[in-house]
Amino acid sequence: MRKTTKYLTGMGALVLTTIALVAADHIDAPSSRGTTADIADFFAFEPSEGSDNTVFIVDLQSDVLPELAYGSFDEDILTEINIDLDGDLVEDKVIQTIARDGKMYFFGPVAPSATGLSSQVLTDAVLGNVEISGSTPIVETTSDGVSLFAGPRQDPFFFDFFQFNAVISPEVDSAPGGFFAPEEASDAFDGANTLSIAIEIPNSMLGIPTATNALGLNVYKTWVTTNKKQ
Image (cartoon, rainbow, N blue to C red; front, side):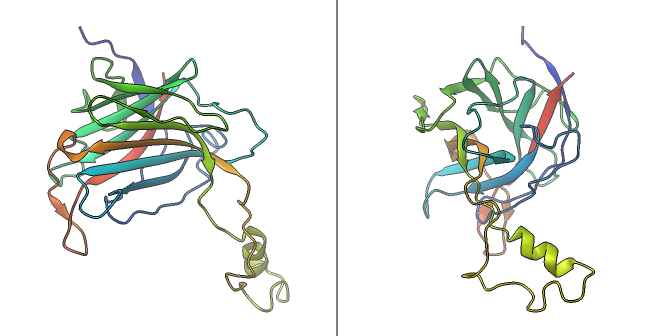
């Protein structure tokens, strides 16, 4: 019998393809802000041109300062990478991750038991696990050629937050020169981490993509959700 636990989707999804791939959110709704239910970034890409693998990276809980304790993934949060193979924007396969006792466990990629807002942990589709990294990164590679990582990483988002606020201020003279040039801008996220989950997986385990991007390349339609245990 399949062991399942019901989870309810709490955050919005970011729709991306496997070739070009940047999304930044960084502050979700108050109910998820400051927790590992808060989706900051989602990346999906080929590790090299013509590779037979796809890499998925999910960044959670932005602005995690280096001196804070590592490995603070919420054990009541299920992170789910959704993959649409037939173009109907409904997940056909999912990769799930959940933290337990200092490790991140991965399940899938398999067809979900339910689509939409609720999810169940597919414990009969164990993919592998990896110790949650501290200051030294730990990567686990399975016998199927799947590489797994979970832990803190430098926040990839570059944003001159204070100058942005000056530009949008109602005070007319608060930023007379507008935004700074890139070499003069100050990254408000420099030195801060996100809590990252990364997986590199053979495309043969994902299925055949049916979508094409602007370059005419075949891509997966994929998005990520976080779900809180009910």
